[in-house]
Image (cartoon, rainbow over all chains, first blue to last red; front, side, top):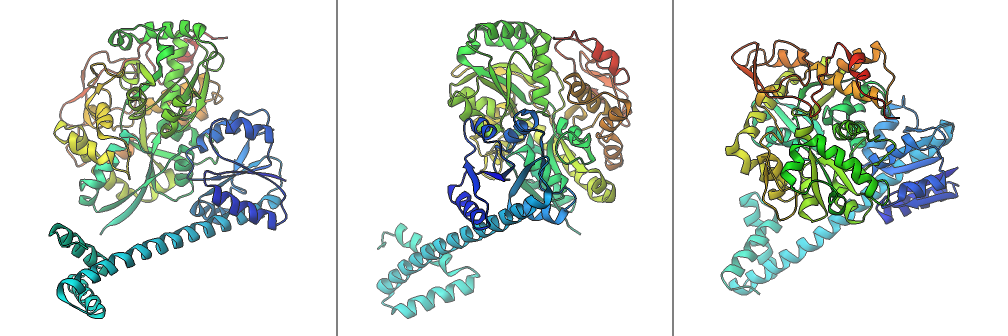
Length: 193
Length: 404
């Protein structure tokens, strides 16, 4: 079974490709949706096309599937139009599958299920990375605010932090927001560090 | 009680009424918490609607008809009780290509028939078949382009290459030389003109003076099961549309639309369609086209069944659907003037008494019978002066000379 993955994100496509390899599929190709990707896809004659639902190039792909003579008869969206749970999962995960007519759906279903799992896993990794990145910068902001307080009010590090925390609680804000406000104020007053 | 509603949209200037309804409190006043879901392709917008991830969508009117007729992936009965706008498209072509056309742009745009013939001649001078980008097979743009090209004997399936690409990629594709021009909703044509890549060749409003464009589409079953929510939403949209039409709010609206979570393009480009002052060639003074895009006035939102049937007639003409009375009835039933009337029954909105009209028959503003107050319909003529009688589709279709 020849599977083509159309994806902008090199990383996500690799994650998906790796999963498909592990599951025993070995005829897998990644095509970015750029320039003449439609002609490339046509030459590859895939059995299944997996595509990011968020990709603006989906309309181009569908048009190609409608008019292509190289790809026997168009292609149905998703695996089994009646399998609503599967369709919902695919939309939530952001993946669409186009399947060349004639390929038995029981052979395709595991491919799509795997794509859904991998897309979800990828989204989770991305949001964790994003959280980690913002936690890191939050920590830097709080550290800077602490040192301003330590310098200007001769506080210990612990007391400086306690002061920020109390202020945040009183104002119903996050510590990092109070810290940022303090840094801004200190910069404006020329007392920045 | 507040009802949450999710509506999918594409980043286009004509999503304005939905954006205003959410951001300026019209939805909230009707107890609706609107969640607008930004979507980058029509295929994904369609899937979100058909598979129930959203309750409604900012949809190309022909796509709503096509999905209902089973022409675009999973068939589903859709219902459009509200038109989000009329007009708003333009065709732009690479400056090199446009050299073969009338150089005085105001004259070029004022005479679509002459320009269509010049365009036909320009195809012969071009080094290959020109590649023209359209946003979707079932878009108002593609249908209008086909109608216009064919008037000069150009067969859109033989003499040019129509390439489907999403509006947001049109300018990039011009830049890369993948297409020689495109027809799309604003602000994308203006963006290509501004980049010096293209100039305006035709304006939708001059081809069909009141061309049906985006509708608010629902799944029919959901529409029938939630009458109160639908009515509240329609009332909110009518008020939002009046707000959008008011020049006093233009600046506010322009900046709302420019936001990254909506159209994400510069405000001055978005303003061109909203104010009807278009720059047709980079660096030249703007051309005034006051009816470039309409939201509320002249009962714009009213979904005339005859307009759904006009779309159907064009799908038949281009061989996209077989003509039979059952298909025609299903296509016409996608537009739901009955729901519009029900929703606005107690309002002071004037609306037509009829549900169908001759399309293209109004040459000058015309006062018509309305359920209350005065209603003036704007001119709705086609540039070729044809009139579409929704009860005589066969006759209308046989009036076009075969192209091959």
